Length: 500
Image (cartoon, rainbow, N blue to C red; front, side):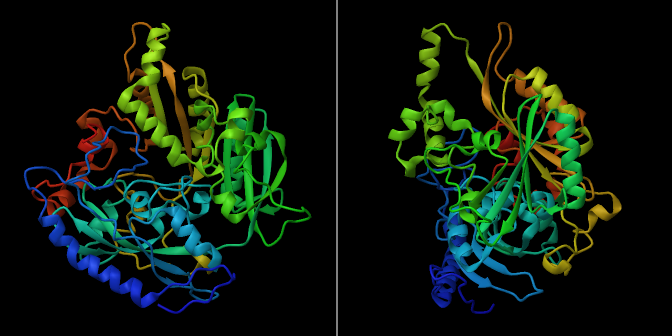
């Protein structure tokens, strides 16, 4: 690693020697802490917060404390042609990581939309953003990671070498194989601002066709595109937001601010162009949890003025949801008012581009939730990186997609095929004669029918056989047996479907 120079006066200093010493000490003790936990109960992390929408125990008194694996440990600024990298603790939130890296002119290749997602969580789960059509998913920018396995060993997993199979099956394993203690990730060089164009389309078909053009050319109307996502407000009102890095405000007196009274997703309908600071662009969806803050009244002008600005953020809304899940206050009020019970429909699904319009049209006709979010995704090719130089060593197993096999078997997207993430987050009334979960089951069936995959951060209803077929069980089981032979960690099915 090399010493780096700040590109902005406000860049925080990194005491490299101290950070490394603290981290090595934590690595030295974590195995003993794991071994000391009761062997008659499955292990879980001692953390009180989560971005998962599944039931989880609130008792963290006997969980594994991994809070020491936190922060920026080393930064390699690279050169004009080399890809910059950073070693970071697995429990580092993306908010913290952006605050540490952005003043130096860098950001992770993919920054998931919510501030408190940890980098370890994004890699063992899934994370996407508007850069995913060119940078893929967060785990694809990982060069190596040190993992505490279910067997209590700390191993260094890379695309090649002894632990290549663990490296390949770790994404989408949700902590069922082990926990990422630190990771070496690739970075992207950032600029101070992001310029946006919001392009309206009169139909889902037109919008999806435009997505295909942007994904293939990384341009729209002769202008380079570095970021793309979209919002479907209705079948006849759809928008793509196309972003690019820029060094200045491009004629504006100041950047837009959506951290106070204004709401970002409404600006998409009101403005054709916009400029945000790089920091505010990365967190543009967090302030209002996309649009879900309206459920708490946070978008009402009067409530908005009274709501402290520092509390307009996703983790605050998540705590409100968690409180409701535990106590059912609003559900009880709805029952007294004679309103039907409601089913939670909070999902992100990846659909092949060629079937996206079909799926979105089905969804708009079948599920009363609007708006919905669209975000294109394309897995990276092995030799992609800044300057188109090889970015990391590639093993025969990591090259599996070249022969038609998915390179990441627990979430089997295929290289060379464009996908679109479709996100929808709300509740629907449980109709007379229906049961809680019926709508989610119909969505799961439709996603499978069109060749898509469903993220596992929320409720899932698959039976074991279906789940095994969809989520790479044939690749998973040998790795689970090798790295967690005593089953000290819940299996992926137990975590994703049975919510253990």
